[in-house]
Length: 146
Image (cartoon, rainbow, N blue to C red; front, side):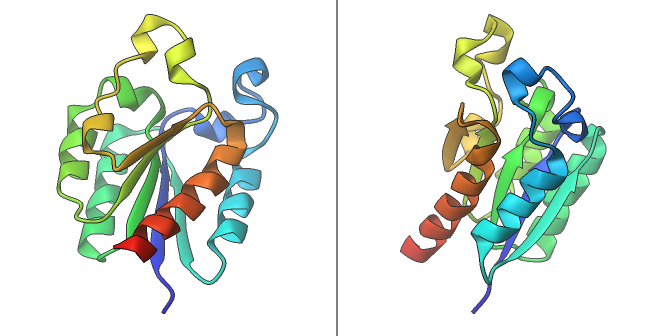
């Protein structure tokens, strides 16, 4: 039976491919979405990006209300500052994978403390855009094991 996986992206990720390519690479968000859909196989992907904290919170609520099977979330800069995103994720019953394109632990100290990690089932960081496909497959593995 196909599952529904939400892939949620925070601020500035719409600029992938243009923004700091030495850190984030040249892959665009549209290409990331295609990678996620391919990795998902028969599972449905709800793929979204926003530059607004409240919108990200609303999409987490939708995942809860629609009984999504799992969430992959790259909160971007909100990772380090958003209590509302943390609180919304606390309400989600399924597995959550926190994803970062860069290795946040090799960057400036401000990027070392994630508010999301304590509620994430797993964290993937530093694999570049390919980390998204890895996250989708890992989410599927977690759902299979449950």
